[in-house]
Amino acid sequence: MKLGVLQFLPPTFDELTPELLRQLRALGFSGTGLPAGDDPATVSTDRARAIGAMFQEAEVSLVEYGRYSTDLVSPDPENRARNVAGLRQAFRIARAAGCPAVITGSGSLSPHGPWMPHPDNFLPETADRLIATLKEAVKGAEDEGVVLGLECHTVTALSDARTTRAILDAVGSPALKVHLDPVNWMTWETVYQSGAATEAMFDTLRPERLLGAHSKGVTVEPRLIIHISETVTGAPDDIFDHAALLRRGALMPPDFWMVIEHLSREQMPAARDHLLKVADRLGVSFI
Image 1 (cartoon, rainbow, N blue to C red):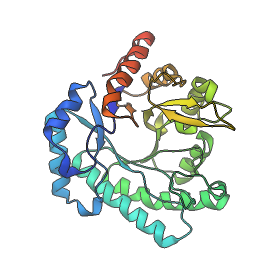
Image 2 (cartoon, rainbow, N blue to C red):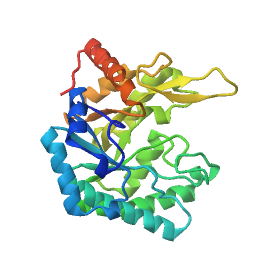
Image 3 (cartoon, one colour):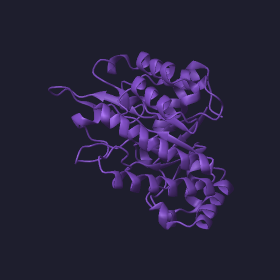
Image 4 (cartoon, rainbow, N blue to C red):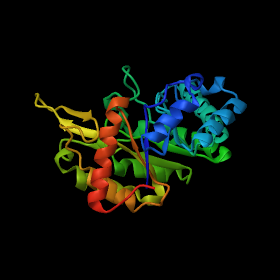
């Protein structure tokens, strides 16, 4: 198992410097994501190769290339086609840079954004559109020799592990996997038993369908009616069972990544130390 972090680097390729990569490595993280702020269609293949070489020279592994605004469930076929075309450009960039995976969500029918709830996200016809669009998108990943990783969420069409596994099976490509984020699948029924819930996610998806995992915390706010929120890994209000996630991560192949996310640079050392402390208590290690 390897330890990485997101949000340390600036959002665009032009802002990236070898010094920033050295600083990231000095924090004890061996991997991170490609800066995701550029439109991949505007980045040349040669530029992506040069960016990849910068990471190699700094001995920082590339874990993922996030395309988190992608919409694969829109009722508009032209909109879905544009999003698939954007993913194909991202696959090109990932391959050239030496990044093994492009990460996307399913999108949402909400007018408020691709990670926002909408009742129609759970309709059978929404799942059918998602499956058809993923079948088309994953061809591009296969062509470029990279993986298309899904980040799931309880408010989207990828609402739980069982539903997601059914969609993976329907698409039927080994180049389609899940970048597991257990906090995104917490519900009122599971948030106080997050360890058992995380174990069930691993059991349902199985190792061959898992790309890596995101680490963050979860908290239940003392407000009516129910408010489950993200927090920073290891923060005082974090009730997530990180030991369960690390135990299962340690059983995965050695290239399985545990990537801390959604925190400021100032918060990264404490989050890192929390995971290292839990790992030490369990007798597992990062490589």
